[in-house]
Length: 408
Image (cartoon, rainbow, N blue to C red):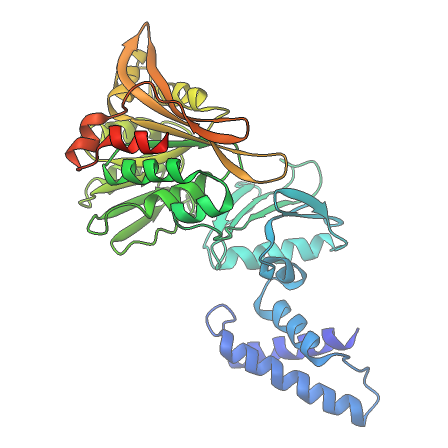
């Protein structure tokens, strides 16, 4: 056993004896680690114990092992790492700048299981043969997803998606090249005017970041309720209440699905509703909420703005046989105002590729729509042929015609 492992075991024993909780008493654990490393270093000088080497590195390794997530912690502390995943104990990948790379790190199957157990400890969520999938939040806000055999072929599949706050406002997206100043001004005015906005894109296209930035433009006096499967949104507003789903307990009861949360949110006096992502029948409850005069935003996975509009017309049909397209399509047309589509370029950069206005007119089951901004020749250009949601802009004091004319 090497020197660092000896100190780690000594610290673990002290933690057990003193009844400390590493998740809640980090300062005490840090002092304990420092004292244990210093004590071991003195003993190694006087006796035959193997030396620790660089003391600061030893402290970090021991602390990560007992209070963090072991050998994965340096990656989780690295601000350039966007995502980390484990396909097998010897196949551990990270993504930086939208590009993946295989690390040199190797674990054992037992170490992977121990790390996952430690990650789930603070979430209260479980993982076993009866529930082989789990979604949970880590203490730093990262999203953990784990799948175990026999759903996977052999090894535990672990994915940790980190949320690096490079942008919290539309101005930051301009600096990153995600949107142009003209498009950002238009989107800011759209949020301020209470337009209902659907954000679409593929996985890792920047939908959550864009929702956060759009949410930052909500007037400060509004009360915002957010509804998500796992907490991901972090809005820089004062009056915000976040709700997340809950998995069933060991008896199979106590589950709180997204549909339930959308309904509960309406009882909490919201001025604005934000649904982190719609995948299934909860889209119906969201549409009904937005169709009642409550402004809001949500995101959906889609290949384009047009596909997102088609998808949001299809998902509510999952709510039951009594729900038909004849009801859903006009409802979508009457309550959604804009679709903002995001994509990730080949170099990993996230970009808004289209802002599409949703019209209120339906022809042969197809909603009338037209692009307001579209990315052409690498630039997001204004291409509006009509004024989107002109009455909402006017009611909020915005001159949409002048706003679009500035964008030209």
